[in-house]
Length: 153
Image (tube, rainbow, N blue to C red; front, top):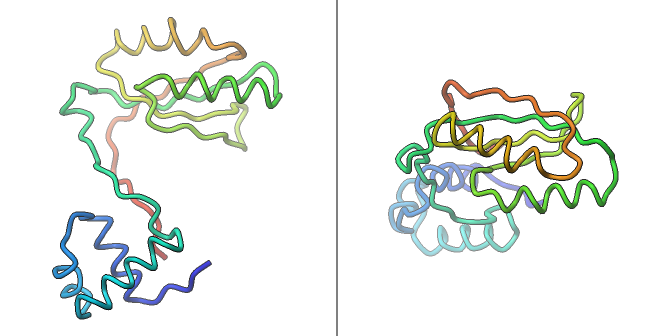
């Protein structure tokens, strides 16, 4: 693991807020000249601290009004069953994240975005529950996301 100093941490925080910021603006904000700033960003990328640059899409602007957390229990705990489930789940555009979890009776916790309750019903009954091995599903609807971020030390 790379040792990060305060400047690296500032760079990461700024890039999380605005990954499109110019190197010149970034350098000014962290009190560096442009060349050393660009070098630091390049090192953060090469060492895997910065793994990707992405566009964050406002799902609601695209009509996806409901955010759903779905806890799923599988009937068998085999590698083949889990691999099949995960592969099928990747095919559903509504699913925005999927985690294997412990400390609960369920095996997976997924987050999905749907347009409305009818869309959720179709997703649940005609696709999610049809995946081989899905035994039980527990749904919670998100009222509002307070915040979402990455850890920067």
